[in-house]
Length: 267
Length: 275
Image (cartoon, rainbow over all chains, first blue to last red; front, side):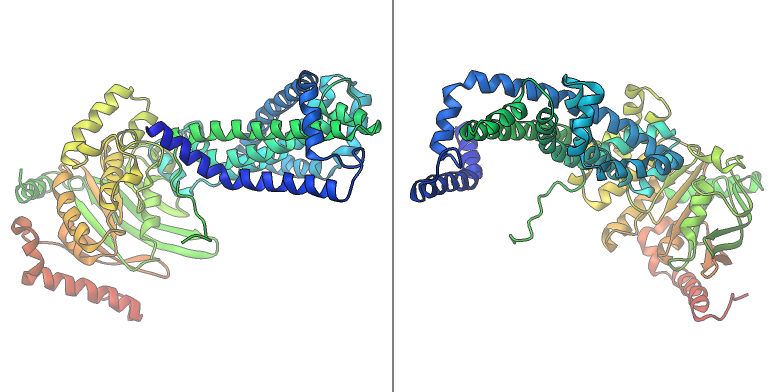
């Protein structure tokens, strides 16, 4: 019974999103029909769905290639971000020498760097992982640093008066306090990692959704491009949902002070 | 042991062991950026003594506790607490309860309470036992498994005090422990604090802006003035606390309160220290 209630609550929670999506798809279908738009220019949703289910194995295979690049890139980004954020928190010299470089790295248009990466490291998985890291590293490191910084000086002093070593203060106070901010960065990174994967594949690959979109686009197989986009969005949403799941689990273990959702529009 | 008999024992102790200062602050000054926060502050607290530091906000009361605990280092002058002259050595050797409860929201009451022992490497089972022992007299035995945000402000302060005193150091510093609480909770916690702190072999220094709290709890009251922070008067509290909270309506209590309030007011009006 409670199970059914929970399901019902879930459906009600998702209803606005489902309704909105269905309405947009219907509008799209109607507009394409009314204005008689050619399929190679803009395929109707029904055509895209037909493409999706015509060769699901084919699309899934390419999705698997992209997903593995993303997962590796994501893991590398998190590891790098933890090391560098810790360094920045630990020492002012590290902060002053590394922080400007991190910010400068974000001003490089990665799209122009991608072809060079292909030349430097080849067309195998390495070049895609690097592009994904360039996309995802920044939001993770910035949010992690600001999370670690968000700790009250008084809390740190309290730890010191209890005789905590710097490492104890870091692991028992700063890391748990930084989790909400860290996950905010991870969520941004989860979404942009998909873009990174596509751009990486665009400039030199033999498989993956990005490669597929480029090839299909060149052949005016627009429905296939859109099908790849649909799979890509599902991939991004799944990654996002995975991050949210880990976040929920970790915040249950380390609840932050305020766990009330604030909505200014609702009294 | 009732508070009154405890007090008599304390007085006896002091007569036998004179000059056994657990806290000694001599001619200490402290600057923050261009401002002189403390200027030539000197005082001492002996073993078994409870001393209160009263003064208006911003007079550097909390800074004195931060200096004694070792969180800050003095600009000039000497501080010694429990025989430790170096501020760095004092970190982890002094019980210090800050103004805010500073409880970690992800730890239960029991886990917050044993933090100090945990950081010292005391095994979990042992530290948990010691929290449980003390929790009874602290009135938090029933909430050991609760998270801090499930507790009232008064309960949180009890947990914070337990965390501070559990390491059982000789010097105890209390920074406005009940400052953020409503008057009723505060007065019940003041009485409770008086009974729960076994201070026969300790030195307690309480910072407060509440004159009644100072008179009620302390053997001696130091009055501070701001800009720059300095001690302008020292008063011994010889009142009979055996009659409980009724003491607050006795003539001697009111006279002491009026006297200290006058000292504080003189400072604020800029009349300088009274003799």
